[in-house]
Length: 402
Image (cartoon, rainbow, N blue to C red; front, side, top):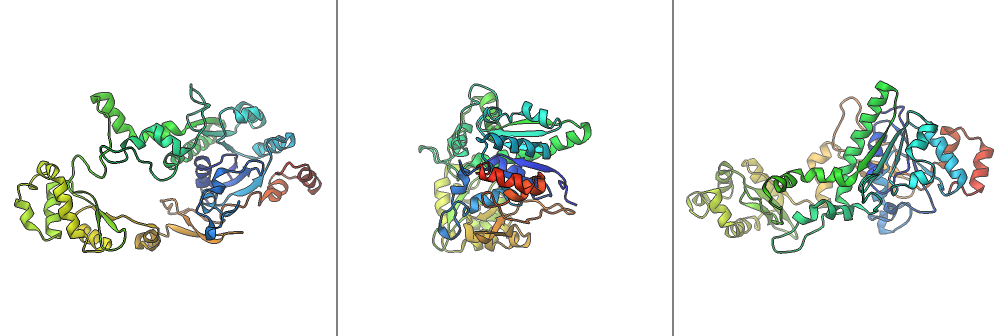
């Protein structure tokens, strides 16, 4: 039996953070109904990569990745009877998740106080850019913007150059972990007390947590973290180095004198141990450009994998700069089945990311790919909500399931 078997979730959230949090429950037994609308599509349905390089409403593997194991339902929440159906879903559910702009659910009559009247022990999970309260609560945006607000861009890049953007909506992947944990905590609380609760998650605050040491350094010492490229204040060499082949690189980090001695042994340069330019960390930092050139001359003649293996066997931290092909061919990831194969009605068979951990007694089950828009509307209405065929057909004709 999966840990969340019997838990029912109505998921009104969209894009990434909310859907990933509920996906983690779905992978471990929860029944999750993903509510969408043809009136206004989820933006991530139009995010590449697309199967076969051809775009389409149901062809984004980016979207399907976030919605594995869920039932897909189309529902127009701007239709009065659509709201009535949404309320029935809440009556059925244990958890209601949403990520609309602040105030939108209340505008539909689906705010937390409304839901408590329908289902007193409901757990409502709202995830938004900056939380439900405060002077900027109603500002809308996406994770790509939040990366700048949280301060990640400030520290990414090279000295003297402008800030860089990490790949994608970086903060989404951090905040979602908090979301899953909070849902688990709320379920445990309800099991003990019989009471639900409201979860107000600020993706802004959840993400700044990961820069806490830099904030503390400013608060205590007045230092503002800046861009330092691939350098590290207490390590040298510390960089990514070119290797044989097109755009192949390996990261190497030497943090201690012991590792420096081992590094010199791996590259067969024991003479560097007595070289005054490199015999201490301070000396290596003063001559870091020269040291990087020296390391690059050695790495250029070898495959990135060879550099990594030799360094690791010698006790020096190192790792290739992996591309997509490397990940799918990686023996460690293959052994642990980090990529699962799922079937999609339109995309076909495709790989899905695992979740990074394995529960020994109840490992995650990848049953279905993310659904096509509205794929399970009839099933949800007739089997989960108990609608008869006549009512379903009438609502369908009235445009409720749009």
